[in-house]
Every structure is written in C-alpha cells, then in structure tokens.
Image (tube, rainbow, N blue to C red; front, top):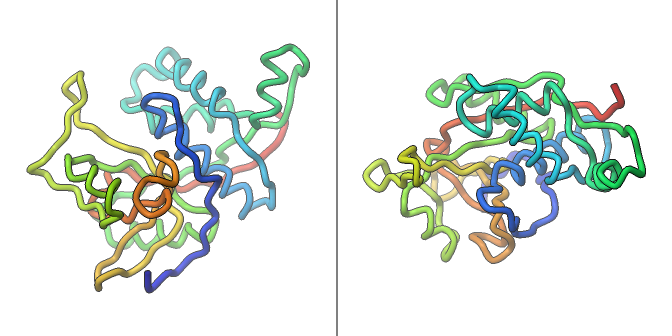
Amino acid sequence: MRGMVSIKYSGDIFALSHSNGCCYFALSVTLESNLRVQWAKHVTLSTRHLIKLDADSRRKLPDVRGKPKRLVLMVQNEGVYEEEQYEKIMRGELSEAPKCKIIEYTAYKMNDQGQMRAALHQLRRGGPYAVLRISSNYDDCKRSGVIYRYDPNLIVHREDGLRQTHAVSVVSFAVEAKAPILECQDSHGRRFGREGFLAVDPCSVKELYSFRVRLSIE
C-alpha cells in the first residue's frame, strides 16, 4: 500500500461475537485510539456497557435515528466504562470509576471536499468513526481483500426493509492503484479482508465522525 499519511492506532484484532455488534466494536476501537493519541491513556472499553447504552438510548433518545448516532450521543452524555471496571461495578465490587466521555464530536458531510480533508486531518488525533453503505459486493472483500466500493445497484436491505449499513474505525488514508482509499479496522477478525482491515472507497461512507475525548470521574 502506498501513499499512507497516518499511523495506525488500532485496537486488538478480534471477531466480535455479538450479533449486529459492528457499532460497539468500531466505536470502542475509535475511542480507545483517541484516548491513546490525545491523552496517552491505554484502556480497553466495555462492549457490554456500550450494549446497555444502546438499549437505553432507544428510550432516552427516541427521536434520534440510527444506532451509530445514538451511541455517540450516549457516550457524550453518560460516558462508557473501561471493561474491567464495568465488570466490577456489575458484580457490586465497585461503585464508581472513570468513564470515557466524548467532549466534542464533528459529523462530516461526505459530499464536501473541504470537510473530507478536515476529517482526514483528524487521523492525527486518533481516527474517525465511519458508517458504510452496504451492497452485496461487500462480501467479496471478506475473501479477497479488494477495495470495497458501494454499488447502488446491489443494495442490501435489512429484515425491517431499511438499507444495511456497517460501522468501522478509520485508521489511515492511502492511495492505491491511483485511487484514494480509507483503511478501516473491521469487526470480523483477522480472517476478514487484509488481516482484519478493509480498504474502502471514500464514496462508500454514509456517516463520518471525529471526537475529542477524556477519561475522568464526573
């Protein structure tokens, strides 16, 4: 791969077993990398706590459409615990602990070149969180590691009829075969794509967020 303009601040590569868990994986990996870059904090955030925040968000944020956006707002409002601390809290061994909270987030317009440049600049602060449009050729990337390009003629729909999306953590920007790509950490483990990473055409991205974060007890 040529033309890389950032350092990978990715988390551990593993396959997430929770169904429809890409949002939890992508957001936790992105927040962890932001904590490492912005505050030199090396933590593992709790996926179980993110799942609970997601469940709570449907009641607390009924007017916000889409799990990715709701999760971002819940972490901004309430924060997410580190994995070990959350397990202790659930067992009654701890009453309070530091949380990772989003101080500020930016949602980028994908059809604005200036905003895209601004988003890529955020790779220096830990990397953005992306939501991809999914077409059926996405499965080709699983086997071959080819660049994923959303095809509007091959749209995948969920059981509820809505269009399928998929959340990933953006770790770098590169130029490959004279075309720009985003290299993203996926939630399918090392057997997926390029040892757990996915090369994505930027036009396949539906939503893109960057964060300023902190780890503290309120």
